[in-house]
Image (tube, rainbow, N blue to C red; front, side, top):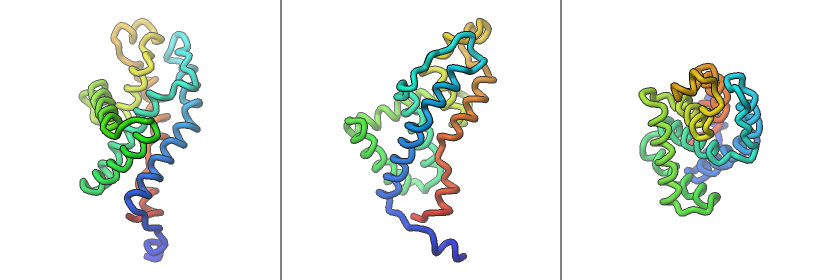
Length: 178
């Protein structure tokens, strides 16, 4: 009971700032390790040689995955308001118009849904999107390469990695109220 009084109240704009800055920080701090883990994964016959600077696809995949979890963590009206603020902030960061950024996010959502079909599990979809966006099929053994499907062992390891890039709304709501 007392804990609820100690929660800090946030506006939608403050929430959007925390979300955008938090995502960018975790991506900036974590992608080098992700690239290294992919490059060293035993599922590949040769190393994909993903550069630690090649984070643009990863960044968009993480943003989409987190926007989807945001949508399911808030009521529809508040999710829409916060999303619009997030689009504004990311558009400014990436020097894009809000509309073009929103369209880019829609394209990535559609891509993730397509490569993840029929599953609706966003974490799994993010892992599959990484596989496809970084052309990792080219580095697999012949069996999986012919199937044009990721090695399930790689996907499982990637799911574990990607879970570190998903916003934990339960922990957030223990500290803040809106």
